[in-house]
Length: 101
Image 1 (cartoon, rainbow, N blue to C red):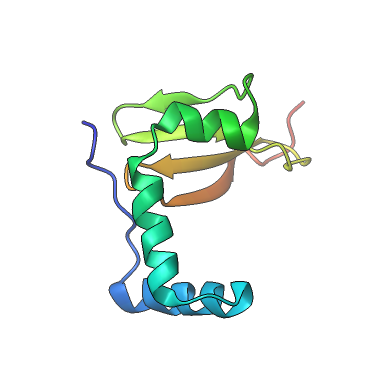
Image 2: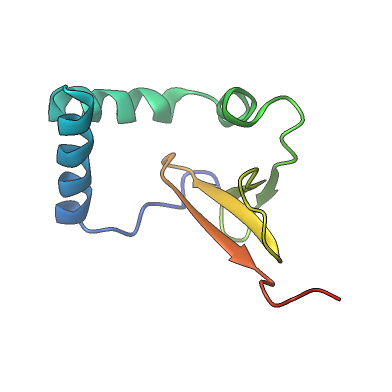
């Protein structure tokens, strides 16, 4: 399954985000691309530990080829998560956000 999940955004959407990030970071789009490529080479366990600490609570969803990490900033009802794809792109969300009794 490894290597299956990919960022679903169009090339144009990704380029626009890279350009905005490069401008905010005062760097070039080429350097942002190089950073993205370097991140794809880092083992996922290392990324999880560096970003979320050694007790990150992440688990792997083999059906979707995603690493799911509890979102430490989520404070509302439901389960807030960050999902990391094989290509190291990510998205966040909440499941079960209706009030839990």
